[in-house]
Image 1 (cartoon, rainbow, N blue to C red):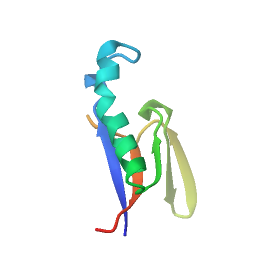
Image 2: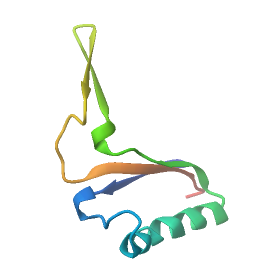
Image 3: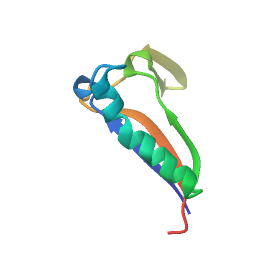
Length: 88
């Protein structure tokens, strides 16, 4: 059976990219990647760009509207995903 695992993060709480704290912070992510590959359950997985790069699409009355940036203001944003194929 295939599953999707979503990775949420609060970017305001993340350590600065490139710092020793950031490397430690990413340790769990790297460990999960290795485990999923070693267990041969990972179908796909990707990080996502920052919410500031988002474009929101809406269809209203048959017309497509586009807006730059995320539609909703939230503390946590979707940072990435995995698709896993697991027996149970």
